[in-house]
Image 1: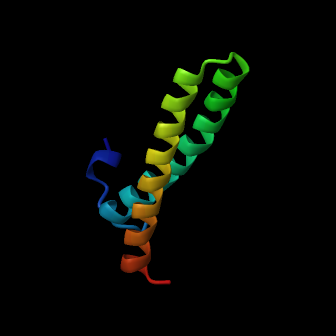
Image 2: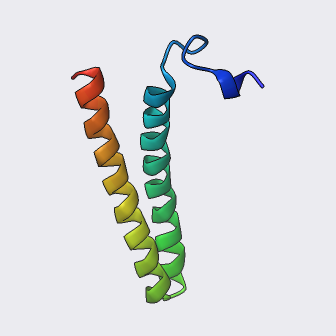
Length: 77
């Protein structure tokens, strides 16, 4: 499996940096998805589930911010 041994030669980006970029994107994508889930729960008047998804959204935003800070520090602004 070529991907398992990829160290940046194919993509031009070292695995650790690529993984960090992927992580930020995944966190941001999850924050967007949680917005849909929050709206669905609110439409059903299920505040308990909506609150859970709000917490998950906040955690995803925090993860994205931490990842962006690391990227900025490592790649430059």
